[in-house]
Length: 433
Image (cartoon, rainbow, N blue to C red):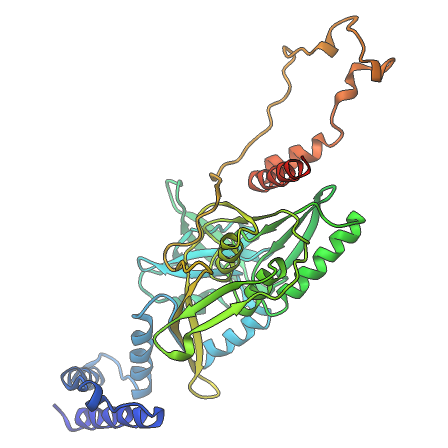
């Protein structure tokens, strides 16, 4: 072993011993012997690469690669945040950044779309949850790493990038040319679906999401001129976000009880979050829509409302990201994102790699209303039919539904939402009886 490698091992051992003293724990020698053999191998490889690699590589570059590989080898969500990535993360949590507008992860070495963000270039171009990105421009993404892929996808607004994706059910890859833009993340949208029945869409969880959702519900009640009969909370393709936002949204519909808790190796990772009194809907029926793109914070909300039997969960099994990532600053410019705990629902279910199973499963289908056949004849269509005494003198065509066009549009454009509305109406009718 060369002199430089020996010095590296010395400093690494010294750093590990110093860290244990600072944290007030047993020294590694007392708790578990340091892996000196592995450290010697690392130092030997470090020196060999520096000496024999085809091009000169600085010590800083090699150490950056080593740290990045150490963290990314743990799980798909732990990462080393250099100055550029740390800054991008801070911009992302503030609600505005430049890029395509997709939440991504890693699967089998490829970049997998967890969910496209609403009203972003990726969503408008047709990128869908579950797509596997296999090329970025002409560069194959196999095993290039999540951080590097994100770096390539982000860029100056107005510039374009070509994504080649493999989609389930498609026989050949799909190619999308997408123009980057400043991503302004409006997390809450709302509208009335039918008299008395509201709809709130949460695109992701930011710090003000719960407050914005409550304001949207109040606006719907004002529009309805009274309390809502029921509400659809849409968490489909919501990739998650701020934990506090998920807890606050769950709390809005719960009177009391546990919302979520976390457990990890460190004592500081054991946290519990409880709901406070007050249900914004005053007990009115609630349906939550989820799918394979609902992840992390979305799963916390769905799991809490399901365990407390406060809502009916409809759709498809969620993504299954039940781990907690902690941003640990190393300096003012760099940090590490480390998985430190797992999420558990109030009933003790781990979300990790399992997801939330919906109460009512909905297949991924698209429906089209069948036109009325000329062969279909009703009593009212018969010549000289006997009139209904309550509609004497009126045409038999009076049974036509004036909302037919609106219902047809919802059915064809969003089958799952249409089913959620039908369920809400059914619950309301049954409750009255």
